[in-house]
Image 1 (tube, helix red, strand yellow):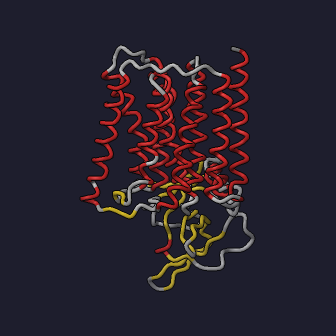
Image 2: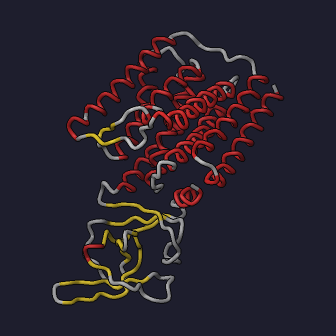
Length: 370
């Protein structure tokens, strides 16, 4: 038993080190080679666990009713989402792959998911609740890194919004995967992952909905499946899921609130600060919250504006009025001179109302690494 605990600990440490190194150096490899490196890593971990841990015991009680219920929920949710396209329209799927790319990207990804779920099942052997929580967090981080690198290979612009859109569904999905593996079989978790994570590569068109709605669907869907499983199988122990609710729901609520701020669907919006030009008021790695409807700009207000397709956050240094036109001279508090160009009123996005220290660092770091 002690030997198995040591092996588990070593695997966690080795995985964290591997993926940190992978984040730093993955740009040195082609996307196909990145996937092969990850595939080789999970294959090695799987071989180590196969030789160390006994065969996984699958709980076959209610396995097929569970499969039917999960498939029905997935079918209904995705059918509704795609039928919405008849009303709001469809767009071409940027991740739809040709046959050549299917072999180079989808096939390795299929094998990576296979070995990941096998490893999850092995690590859940005789695990405590705390170990299952840690395993969920561990796989959330690992799968998020995998998704971010795959999407980056498609030239996606990695922002705070996109980072949250990856991490938020990853939390609830890994809750579901851990539960299905622990309570039923890793094969069921594997089936659900294939149906949810690989669908994006298999359909040529997608409903023209915003990223926030896809994120909310991908976040809520695993929770819906878990709730339905407990509704129809009430004799099962509920402690596992109830404890997850206590731990995870507050995090999800906070992240959804941040997602709303980042997308700007409300009056207020949040963006990460990428430079130190406004130091010491706020600095690189902070996030600022700005009011998009406040157009009554006064001297010394900090405004968010567009300049050459870039978003700039500087203080109003001077207001110039020429007839009916108003121009703003801006300056970063940490800059010695005002900005070279004036800001037109139409280019002002909003007025800064507050900031949160360090919240933007994950987005900046990962963007620089990827």
